[in-house]
Length: 471
Image (tube, rainbow, N blue to C red; front, top):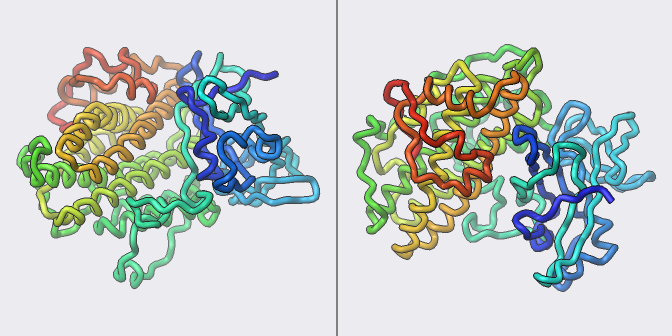
């Protein structure tokens, strides 16, 4: 039997199989940490409440779980929203871009292409008294570790999941559309890069979130088939994304004091500051697409998975902003009630001409710093008894680990293509494009999950002028 990928952290996805039918599994090579691989897992059998985890071991259920590479071998389209059709030759996944179909068991297509498929087994864990899903591992790489396991979206919830955080709406449709957005009519951009520029030039925060949701959905489902690398942008990405006139933007040192979450006033100030960071983070995800989408590495264009990953990051940041904005309203205030700053965007400007520097400073310094400080913030809100805010902050922290992972994935991809050492290169980028020391204490556990071992960041000092770290 081929080597199988064990369940993540000793726990299988069997419990999640009763709530979702599609999962993205991201793997990282144990031998070569710069090598990543993404799979899509489909569950086609509908489990009722009476069909518990223990029943997953039955052959009829195991035969309805399939794993294959997450991108189409034709042009790299994301297969997470592929249609599943029952044909004369068996079950096939149909790519949303060009309708190429791939047999879920063999990966073969009538077009002559072949997608990689992986055998799935349901194994009993007698010690834990539960079942777990094991997946055949891709060849090579000296073994793989699971670094991300997530449901594709609430579109594939089974049954549809109503979260108390989003009032029954899907995670992709978490934003209510205001009358002003409904009334606004304009042609939809034809390429992903044009959509990115449109979102970057959108000042209204709610409209920015709504456009992000629409762009992500269109890109995944094939309504937006072109990345746009072969076409000139109608306008360049802005030097600084605009904000609504009502926002009170000040220098970073002059923002509202936040405190330590001991009072309602302090907790509101902290959540407001985080909402501001998330709004800039939406822009950063789209800026990396718009600004660097035409980048070539050793003559090769960036792979489609690069764009899929940053669309997902942008969508996550939009979700985070919405959850924070809604929580502020539940606490009797609103986003825009406090001063905000644009310190995070200073690093975007500093790294505007280098994809390597952008990945290092924004995603492996600023976002990684968020992994360090988030647990302390969550603990303080717990101590104050603000459990609704804790739930929001825990969702954000979980997602941010995957965002640092995305930064690590594409930074080490660049290093591999350029045949340079990732740690040496990272430390040089920080010295050249960041100001001050990378300060601890470090959340080494979550940093390591994201691929950031201590030799990347320990005892490191940036030598640039003043740039304000995220958080």
